[in-house]
Image (tube, rainbow, N blue to C red; front, side, top):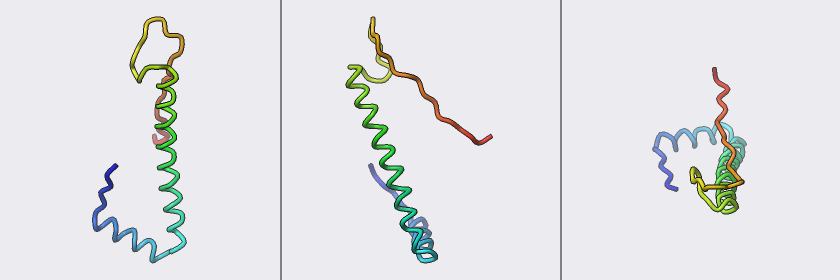
Length: 77
């Protein structure tokens, strides 16, 4: 995973930290929570592929187990 950050973004981060140093912990928690969530989702997908012995969109004749569908919720209207 490659991280690209602009000088303006770094400036904004430093400005936010200077204005309220306590916010740095909130920012770190959010980043960690997001990273851990993505990691766990990926791990569960790999585990499910291993259990089913097939990847996404791979069909097998006579298979009993299937992946459930999913969709992303969008609450903005």
